[in-house]
Amino acid sequence: MNIISKKFSELNTKELYEILKARAEIFIMEQNIHYQDMDNVDYNSLHCFFMRNDKVIAYLRAFYQYDNKDIVRIGRVLTLKHGNGIGRELIEKSLKAIKEKMKCKKISMNAQKQVVGFYEKFGFKVVSDDFLEEGIIHVVMELEL
Image 1 (cartoon, rainbow, N blue to C red):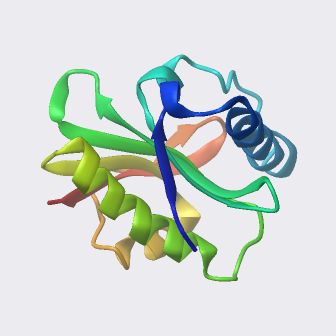
Image 2 (image 1 turned 120 degrees about the horizontal axis):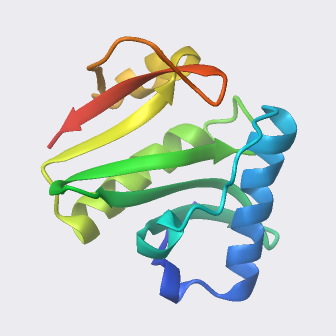
Image 3 (image 1 turned 30 degrees about the vertical axis):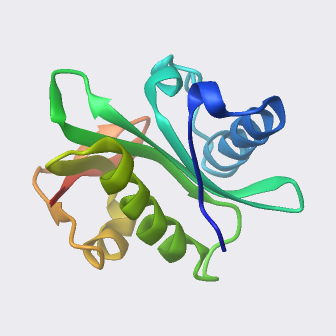
């Protein structure tokens, strides 16, 4: 599957709508997280996603850490269907796009605790203690490039 990786200004309205719809479906409806999803970070992010039948089926965003351009943070990682390999493909292809387009030394994320093993397969390492974010236990994970 071909990854789509675009800056916010490059997204068309259909892509943006489908991204926001997928994020709401996973984080608000499935995980019952009540938060302001549209947090202005999207404006300065690289949006990496797969589309099938005009619908976003997997997504993440990447953005420079506000105080350090050597660090890119990823977040809002989602797949609409679990256990089919799309998540693995999303991470592999997004990491490649981030390395090519964002030139950084490290990639960091706040990962939900239950998926730490998944991210470790790509070389991410846990670098923090557990903490609560939106009622879900998370850890900070980093990948040195």
